[in-house]
Image (cartoon, rainbow, N blue to C red; front, top):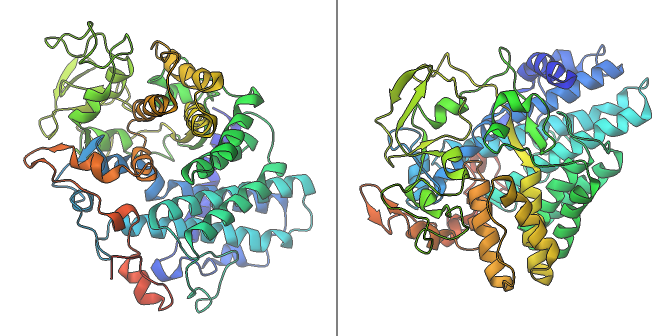
Length: 499
């Protein structure tokens, strides 16, 4: 286990408690005597402790449960008796009082932004600090602020930009446009890059972490050449590689060796930092894969099931992309320590296998905790971002083939067929993203930015309701601001279609 993992677990526990605020206090100065007293902001140790407090924001609900966004797509389905806002959203029922994740995402991101601004407002109070170290820590915080704002922009569109900690009344300002938010995000990333270490990621943000986020921001906004250039910075660095075993990458034992594939993650370690992600995926029934995801996996010859001679309807999971069974358990059963467990609550008939430790004792949700790190950015995603951006910019040149085939090769899938048109390669890349990133919470963002969310959802055969019942109306590509925020800030204009 690396040193940062130990430090972050212990220090963030101490600092995270006073940094939390209620809804209308999210952007006030953090209400803690410890962090604002004359005894703090004096030493390098104070700066390090405050930095870990900012990192601790990654333990908040939006990031710990990002996988649940899969439930808003054709990849997964939320258990209808739990956290019903996901089912409401999937049915096109979304309003400012929906609550749940709609509010948690907004509040969680601004809690993170508030912590970033609090750090940046106070770091200059420390006189005795190495300038290089100070600049690196500022860069890390600016990256984190960009990260929080990116997810705000992707979820709510134009939002309020706070560059410093406002007063209560000063927080009641108008929102910026979506383009202005994107420009601010890129400004923070570009400011951060020169002062971040040019080393492998081992728990703290490095230069390649920032380039990966920059590539994602540019890709999501359709700036193809710039997105390809940013992704290529990561590729050309030579500091990253794909972890040999796809499934193991998402389990704690492999992660403790600091795989070169991981570029950014929330770090966990038992007993102090844990989560119930695996149990949420399986036992408690919060989410299960859809049959549409299972059907999307190609056969091992690279052809879809309706074209491949390898496909056998009597044994439909044989001769398929190995990632199918590494991601999905189609049997609703699992053997753990010689005991057969059956899970009757799966509405789709499928279980997740990705993220699930082999020795997990399932029906103990409260006591059976996970400590695998939640990965936010990884090299396979960067390769696919490069392939997509480069294909959109210039067409399927050899670098596009090289990038997508590296990802496929890790799972022993054959290379993409040569001679594809840009449109054919686009389809191949989009499918590869769906398969490679299944369950990680990015499908929702992908189908929105591709402009296909509504048609994709309407093609889903919803259990008990049939095809065509799921939808994403044009205004629902972005969520409404929580009504509580509208009530607090008369200058905050509600997003279109939610008044």
